[in-house]
Length: 213
Image 1 (spheres, rainbow, N blue to C red):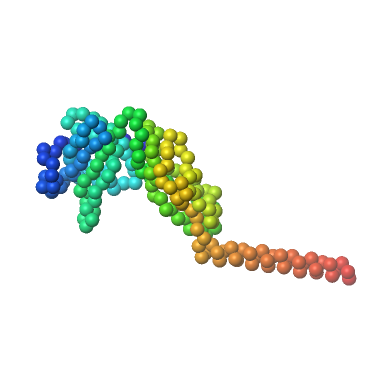
Image 2 (tube, rainbow, N blue to C red):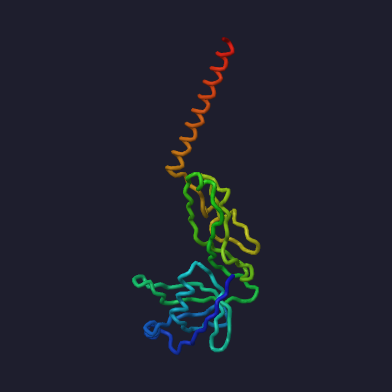
């Protein structure tokens, strides 16, 4: 998993008024938990954007008060109107301890079903997993090359060493659905095959007639 480094500054005061003042200064109130104690701090809004508005998931090397800790982003609060980041919760990552985190799903290949006119439908852009940070991949890669129209891939089919998938086992991650174009194409193929068969029969009958003469 990718690692990104950033520094934070301890908050002198904790409360709504202080948080509002920080945001006006382009700083995002944050909290780190999971270790010996909770630490309230703030990071720059630009750093917050890099962590939040990206499909990537990072292990964050946080420098706080001269100390460095590894953490992951656990929760983010976004303003409903401005879409600005207003608060971030970080979870400290302890050596050897498993964490629960959402990992993005990435598809590889060109599906047979899509080539035949079907439509790829991806229900999960990320999957919730549990595992040690050392076992966490940058993305969960799914090869869709051999997926035909009507076929689906479920969570139960996901298998990555060191990870336990926490979403419902029967949930459909992605699949290729029948589209109108695909249906019409199949009908055309059937008609063409029928015409070829009829032409073959007519040719055979003509040969028989010539042989009789």
